[in-house]
Length: 253
Length: 253
DNA sequence: TTATACAATTGATTTAAATCAAATGTTCTA
DNA sequence: TAGAACATTTGATTTAAATCAATTGTATAA
Image (tube, rainbow over all chains, first blue to last red):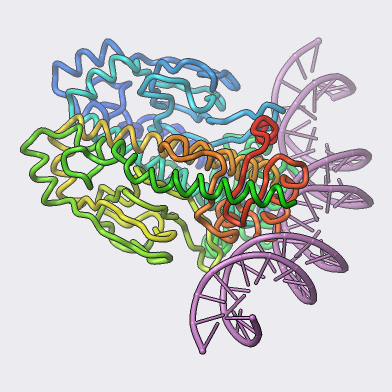
């Protein structure tokens, strides 16, 4: 018991170190030239275009629970996360809420074409985003095939993830969903060069429930179950250490 | 009882008329120049490109339950449906199956970039598809911003639909899913200029269940419930007449 | 037409997850 | 440092949908 608690502190400190280091490590999502704009985008631009983009894209900050936009609003911007996490969600008329996705630094959200936003976006903790005006972006897309192609790749990746989520929500049990969720978060963190074990969950239990199509009670019970079977250690409510990745993978079918 | 049965015959005949007419009406998804290639694509091409596309794109036919490709396969083609319906699905290791989507004429599926297919695709009834080779298509995408943009629009639409399905599978009850499903099919048919009431369901109950994350028993019971409350008439297993669209909409939340 | 195979419906029962509610843990403020 | 406010866990019970199983309906072929 004591040993675990000491371990938790060590891991936590290690995690903090990693989280601090991550700022420096965000180069792969930020453009080396401008600092705030995403690299994948800037890579597609020539110098003149880059100048225009320096004008049309700007950085904005949001704090916990602040909405970046709402579903019914006329769409105006495409966003790229440079720091923090956001959740995108849809609200039903009776107040039920479905979280479509949790997004990480480097992820895009919003819209690049006229219409309404397809979901609402809300900050989880402090967030920095890079904003691209829809209209201006569109002018560039028409002329610049590299940029179109880049955005096409981004959208296609999102589609793959969405289709994966359809499988999870349509067929998996609560246990399987939870296992899948923890592994996904770990993989996601590895992808952006963050410490992938233990994983910190920036969202609360209600968010996890709304994401997995479950209730907080079930989410809590499933975490307890994984803990009891020694597959994970719960360092704190928001810090999960994966003890046995193989067993966790087996639970995802 | 007798009256309903006569009505059913009339509606059926009317439906057949409409289904026959649809063949002529497919112009909006087919290119006026080539007949088999999708219009939206060809609209983006100049004459030279169109010639190349005439070489790289070809029409293929599939019959009921034939697989067009499987999930684990190395991706080779992007497909466009010119006739019939297909289902795209993911298979779990233990045999559970989740249908990601039912596709209609005009819809695209498959892949346009190297990798593996993200789902399997199977014909529902007789199907004609227009095939685009991935590699060749990619060469054009790099040069032709209109084409990239068109494919971007197509992919973005698919993403919107997928995110909608996440909401349905995550939060809606069986009744709501069923109501949503029938309305969606009706809207989808309207979109491609087919008769939107009654709607014919090309897929069987098992497919509907695997699409909605339910079982055939539940699907059947929900249909019976909608029938009993006079919201729909069940003309045959695969022919649903929407009696009260307003009530059906209200059930979708 | 009748037999056969298959698809869909319906009934009885079970079960996984929801709901309701209390207890425990954590964080923030005065 | 207490205590208020909130988040999480856990327990007891209910419920929506699954499961299991039988029946009915609908095509297809002999």
